[in-house]
Image (tube, rainbow over the protein chains, first blue to last red):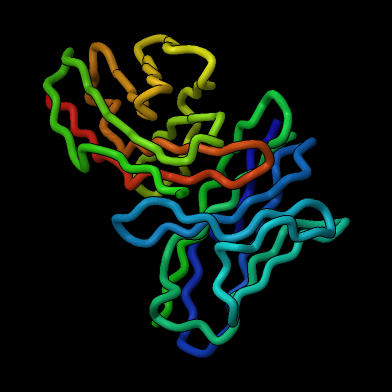
Length: 116
Length: 111
C-alpha cells in the first residue's frame, strides 16, 4: 500500500511565477490536508479538502493561494505570483475518516519550495 | 483557543536514557492527541497517539502519558538510541478537523 505521494519534491521558482504542488493520498483515503512548515518551525494548517469540496480553508492566505481535489487525479495546491516568504516545505496528509474512530493523518514527504 | 504548547525546544539525552517531551493544550474539544517524528528532509511520521479516555498508552519504547484535568500530555522515550535523534511534534485535533501542532522538540541522543 503506497503512502502519500507528493511531487515535485523540490521546486524552485522566481518571484512572480506560479507554483503547483501535487498530492496523491493513500489508497482508500478521500480526505486531504495541506500544511506548511517554515524553516525551524512547526507545521501550520492551510486547507482541508474532500473530493471536489473544500471543507476548511481557514489557514489559507486570502490571496494568491488556492487548492483543489478533483474527482479524478491528485490534490493541487497552487500559489500564484510567489514571493520569497512563500519559501517553505509544504506537506500533504491524508486520512481515511477523520470523524470516525480512526483519526490518523499520514503525511507525504513534502515539497520544498524555494523562491529566488 | 487552538494553541498547543510544546517543551523543551531542544533536548540532549545520553544513549540509554529517558527522553521526556511535554505538551499542553487549551481547547477542551480536542479528543485525539498524536505524536509525530520527523527526520531532516522527510515528512512527519505518526509515532503514537492517545485519546483522553485513557491516561497512558505504550508502544514499544514509546509511552504517552495524558492528564485530562491539567490539559497536558507527554511523550516518554525509554532506552533512547542515537537513531531516535529527530524532531518530535505533538498535535491535537477533534472530529474532522485539522491537526494543531506544537512547536517541535529537537532531540539529540548522544552515543
